[in-house]
Length: 93
Image (cartoon, rainbow, N blue to C red):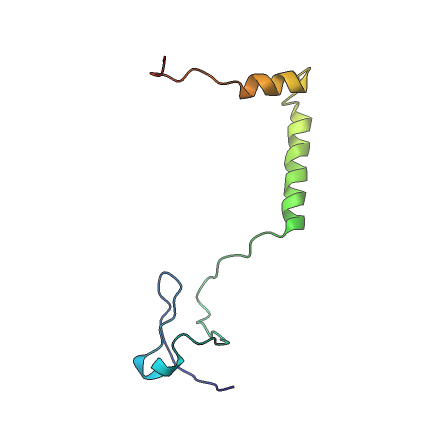
């Protein structure tokens, strides 16, 4: 394994360009360590599955507590009604 140190820019598409004098390395696999200035804010990590599940549980509990669907007596009939095709404006044919 070889170590090469150089400074380069990361494109807006996320690409890292090697200078032409490293052409022999083009197309090869490489392990990289990126050293970035401290003032760069990185995007937060996406939530984990457990975090998404906890968020969904809280949202569903809030919906249940608010009584959002309390008026629905027959869930199957309500769902069929909601999913029923409606006439489209300008498409009477």
